[in-house]
View (cartoon, rainbow over the protein chains, first blue to last red):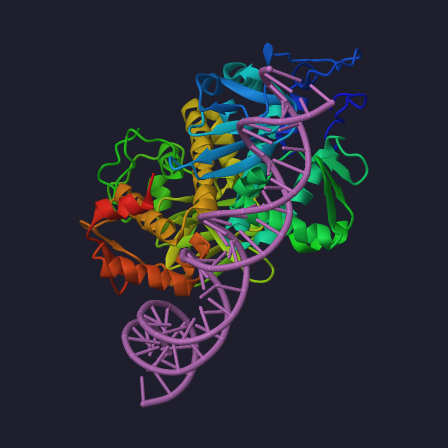
Length: 249
Length: 249
DNA sequence: CGGATAGTTGAGTTATCTCAAATGCAGTGG
DNA sequence: CCACTGCATTTGAGATAACTCAACTATCCG
């Protein structure tokens, strides 16, 4: 693992290698891909040509050619990746944070029917898929990490199914908050118990399979119970234990 | 692709290579793994040592050592793979048919927290994971198929999330039936519009995130509307178009 | 035949949804 | 700076899909 401690967001925890964030680190894409302005860049062993783009708040990218030939890597901001029905119903599959790769399977094969929506101003880079394949065969460590990523993502989608199918509104929303806070913490993007919470109600609704009205009511409960506080776009967790208890195992 | 036409269940459709069934075919595991008694066995290029076992109806296998070091390949019967909560709630992730591999990611890494339950008498074989890894690197065709499998499985789990989060009971159940019928047809396990339907109500409930009582009511509606008929363990689809219309896109 | 398991049906409950109105808030143009 | 417009959020009232409970029937298996 490279020396990346000076980077902000911080590197992934050393003991956990099952996320796309780690994979990108390993591939040496972070310095190029994260677009950080730190003058002391990490050594980039296997730099890949990238071009950086910005999406405005609420801008969507549909299943486009860009997604067929490139892999998207989030540098800054926040976005959601979802699947939708023709009648407008949609399900958010994951919330994308800085450092996340969109469509890990897209690293190798195009993935159909996906929509990305920026939740706030978001910059990203596109990496050529073919480049990645080459790299994967060349570097056994990277390949092993990719394998781990596959397994980890599978576990994640199983958990998502369990949550959507079997948990109630409180549990779903508590999990979403806990999960988001953890992932932001991994990336060094928290300030104590406070995180930037730019998701609209409709994002939370589409991520949990609820309506935004109901999400509002549950968040209201949580606030009245002094478990969390929401002020503008920032969320503070007052009672972590209680929130985790509600979120369940 | 090898000549497997004489096998029953029939081989996967030539134009579709994104399922574990196809992968097993490609790896030459079918003849050994399917446990068919046909004397004209397919040529097995990369045969793997396997041992065959039987699970009785309702028998469970939990997250065991067997699952950590071996990959399970269903030869005959039907089983479900699920994740569960300590309080007993569970979500079925997939229905396993003859030819299916359990835990495709388990081909490379162990997958935690899974339970397999046999729905009827089911035989399976265990394949050593390490064997598979070797094979994967040796055969580029197999590797490519594995990549496609990853992408396909991801698409499937996204659809599952969409269904669980955003579709109603009728849609969920109609999809389950349509989907199951298609998969059985691919394997040559249908008789006209009739399929063997050994799932209990509670399996359908756990697969769709509903209760078995409600599943019973919806199935009752479908029968009264002459869309399907259920007699004992066999299900006949009378009105495929209507069922597909309800299932939606 | 008896006991367990599975399915059906009805009645009443509840979690979540729909609709709608009121409020807040951010960006825009004058 | 203000009024205006277009979102996002909150809140309440009423509707409904799905749930729980419970009793009854059917089916399976020894």
